[in-house]
Image 1: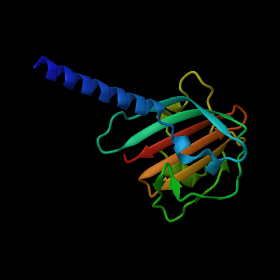
Image 2 (image 1 turned 90 degrees about the horizontal axis):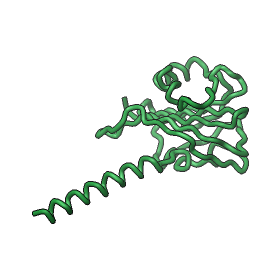
Image 3 (image 1 turned 180 degrees about the horizontal axis):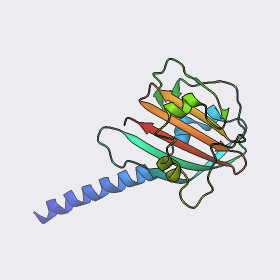
Length: 170
């Protein structure tokens, strides 16, 4: 009986370790591809991430990532984006483009929950400089998959940081 309990405990611990490591090592920007959204020999290093809703059995997520970016150039021409994070987008308009901040009223309304103060506080990872949404030298890229999945990227060339927010459901 002790042997069975030990085996079950070992399997549970290994499963838990796998889930923690998988969550810690997940990098959505790598999954999406830097080459889709940046020009040049761009490299990114994830410096922090936050899960704003925690565990969900329905597949919902609201995650914020911050990256230190090097050699990244923004191209403001349209980008065809049929696949994002290895998923086919269902939206009828799959072209996106980097735009100068501040976000327009349509983007602000569509991404209200992402751009709320709570999200902005989490984005800053407390110890890092704020990326100003009102600074016209900063850029944003908004991808909306029929309001089911939303992705918002905010890039500051001045400090070399990118904020990546991904939301599904809710």
